[in-house]
Image (cartoon, rainbow, N blue to C red; front, side):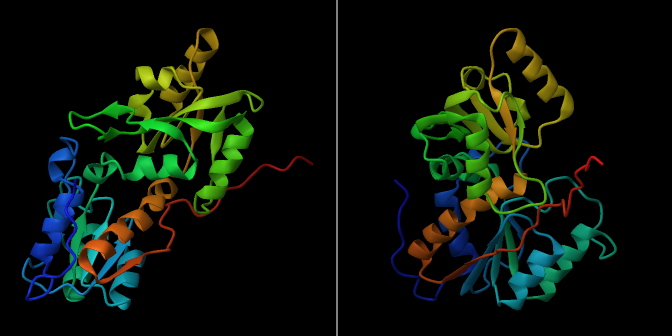
Length: 284
């Protein structure tokens, strides 16, 4: 069981001692091989009295955190996931690094290592839908850990009703849930993966589900999955906002940090979904 720190170190919390707690909550060893979680920018000896949580480290969310006096910014998505050759302020990532440094803050990323824990992104989404008998979709070696979740709805409902329920629990974004399947189909067994999950479309647990919920489904993988379902068997698909699916987790993470650290932890309510509006065709 993760330890709970009831009191701060005698000299107060520093970036280094907070990172120890983050490592206990979301061990970096649990991250996918391609991922790059951890401290992105900052001085390990810096004092930490306030933390700001966000999904994406973009200009607006970083400005918000600094304006509110954050000492440590925790983003779900790593700013430097893809390699860069410059952090000049003329490019987006360089400008963010400079903002954080000039603002006297530090930046940390908790990504797939925060997805796989029992209270991670997919588990929080599954809880929001009231799924029972939850298990990881793609289990890790450590019991209870793994990507995604599979569970059963308390009561079966139509695919349309499930999509509506998703729209109600997720933060509002320009594009709501998009569905592939018969709206009247009854669904009970649900598999899901918060964030980009088309790599799991052929997973046996997904194929055995009535519906699979994830984000960033591309045309060809989604089309092939639906055609296979029509030919033999397979799940309906619901594509949801990547930002929205993972934003739900921030409140859970904040509560864990408040309990452990006893300091101010703020959750950004700024929408950083990249899509700002959609146009629907209106027939004359």
